[in-house]
Image (tube, rainbow, N blue to C red):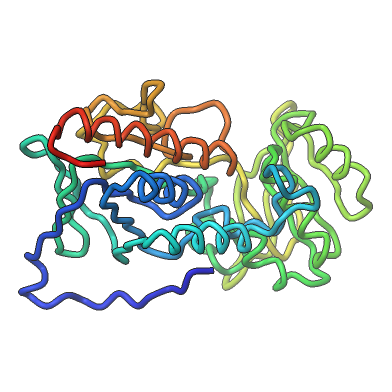
Length: 328
């Protein structure tokens, strides 16, 4: 995994320094790293802006079994390392920091990153998404004290414990199966009477002796003083409630796009995902989106990588057309 660099507060002089590039890519997940690879191969002066670590959400996946070329699967962190290494060989230029503003100005873009200004002829938003919250009593209070959104990160803390997983999609079932390595019992809470996950995953979960199900059920409250102690579940068909003693809650009910930086600049859908055309350009010319942050039907590592490639190639064409003197 690419190293996590400390972000040092810039000096007053450095805060006003500007850096000019052809293409700025926000986000270092599979979409952003693939975009870097394609952009650098095309000869674009490219900068990647990342606030945490390279690999994005994919790096937290214990095992990725559906990425082509790895018949035995690959861990999320190893795939992130490989993508990062490939980008590095092409001279990857990274700014570690939090992008707080993005403006369209005189046919170019200005991005503010911890006080520093990056000027770019085109931008690719590959900022991904984050897990949705349950928004129930007790969740905010007990986050990090028995409530988790990452089984790979926190699973080992629940050895021989009883836990619940909330959700019924691929992410929820994959993580529930992973948690069987540690937990004594995993109860899956799902609003419907059938899982939304792929059949192969659903069948594996149903056959696992450690996994149980609360069908057509929803979480009403998470209880505990200093840590999770129980969870209140309601049957959505008959409205009966049940208090279940547990040690931990893992939440996988969908994602929320990290698009707030451009919400007033481009068209987004009702859920906050960026709307793009076939070239992955947004409603603002020169501003492209790739990966989980954009409106799309399938959010997987493979589609994020594909988006990164398309967005980079589209950005190259845009730069070439709008800046005829640019040599690519």
